[in-house]
Length: 467
Image (cartoon, rainbow, N blue to C red; front, side, top):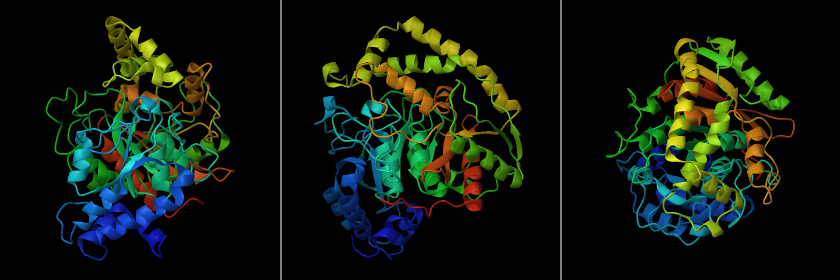
């Protein structure tokens, strides 16, 4: 690595954009700095599955000062669940190990259109099914704070890369906590947007999973979401979130006002919450009270059956994948999920969603009548060691183990509400611990305002892992 690479690598993306625009740093300098760090560090981290650094350098050489695009020359990574023109996209699976898409999906097209330069595709669990990142066909991603532990998942490669300074911001996605979980255990910020906020075009709407940002700063995440969200839903989208009154980036400099903040350290299902994760929420609640918010301890009236219905909904989503994978090439858990999904009839699937809607009515009333924001742990325990939760003989046990690690996240994928991980502290093993903020439907702006207020009161962006 060249002198100055570290400083550039940990500079916020918005500041990098200014430096390139004003000619203080050349875009190719940025890309080459990240390329050197990736070459030096990613052999240990495994945060990327496919790199396109030569292409990134060539694109960066064409960018000049004064380029009007908001992120001209700023590097970014794309999660390997999402199609990138001419760059291998495996979905974390041996079934697609040589798959090279002919076109970008819409959210990637918008990212490129804003001037970002793609460094490569970040590691993911196969099809994004698990909250750790250990695809059997490739290599595991590792936590930059402890290389023996997972960086979470399924956007584990994205969070590890941002935390270790191998990209300034990352496109990721969250179908059951897959942004918030790795953001928490890697010590970075991540936000799952509202259902329909970012289009899935040209593919169909996924009712559980949303594309979103992982970053070191709240402002960078807001700005990337502004780019990904675009001016409106793509033609043909069946579901979309109402556009914000102002760009999300502007919310990060606004006072959130006096908010009603409920907090709980109790998950819907009975699980043990590690003392450090519980204490983080209690400390965050105290800070929010000091900042002038109305803070009270109360859990939303959520029905535990919501957690049991989530695997059914995910299994149907898996069974309806397109392109359809060769089943014998995919991992045991996903084979089981596809088999389960194929056994659910269309009427039963619809009835499951009806049951979910009824169970969520009291939760919606809680946010309408009692709370503007809910504060919880992001995860229940420290991140497990690589391979610790794998079970090839009884693959469905992996889902049970996943639930014990991440019982606070998937309900908000079912409800479609926005939720964020805010970095908070370190546990007694020196591992990052975050807290989750959940907002009202389509109200990412409040989460950005509150997260930015916390960031100003308790900054975290200067933390860097030992790797």
